[in-house]
Image (cartoon, rainbow, N blue to C red; front, side, top):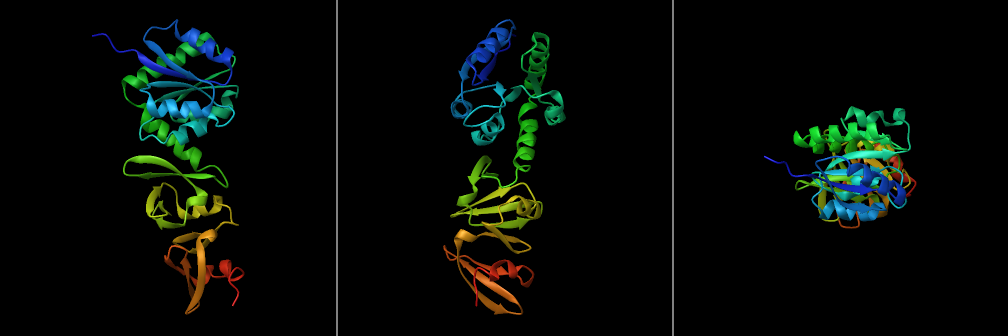
Length: 253
C-alpha cells in the first residue's frame, strides 16, 4: 500500500533559506510541501489550521522565535519538528535528548537527508508529539520572569499571560493557575515557579499560595500572627506568619 506523503511546513524569515529547503525536499520521495511562512505569527496560524506532519523551523526569527512558535501554537498534539539554525551542535544537545533533530546553516545535503530519514521513522512510530511536548515543558520552565505560563485544561495546552493570573496554588508537583473564573494546571512546583516570577508583581503569602499584587484588595490580621487578604474578585486567602512580612510594607497598620 502506498503511504500518504509527509506534509511539510517550511518556516524561515529568509526567502533564500526557504527556497533552498524546499528545493532539497523536492529531491526526496515521500514529502509534500504544503506551505511556507516567513514569520512566527503566520507559522502559529498554519500549525493550528493545517494538517501538518513535519515542520522545518528556523530558531531565530523576528516577532516569535522557533521555541515561542511551538509554545504559542497551543496544540494538544504538535507535529514533528526539525530545527534549522545557525547555532552550533553543542548548544542543541537538549534536542537530541528528546529524539528531535536539527540541521545547522548552511544546510549540508547529507545531514538534511539524515534528518528527513529520522523524521520518517518518528512519524511512522507516532513518537513526535510526546517528545516535543517534553521539550516545550522544559523550555517553559527555564525562563526567568516569564511573560506567559504554559498550562493545560480539558486536554488543551494554553499559554496564560502572567498579568491575567490572580493567584497560584500548590498541587504536589503541579501548580493550579487561577485566572478569572478559570483554573488551569501548570507542570512545575510552586517553589520553582516562585523563583522565576517577578517579585515586584507576585508574592508568596503561604507555602501553598502565591498572589498577584495587582489583584489584592485588602489585608486584615486574624490572630496567632496570621493574616487574611481579599482579592478584587472576593477570594480570601490566608497569609501565614512566615510570609506575612512580604506584605506588611504594602499594607501598613
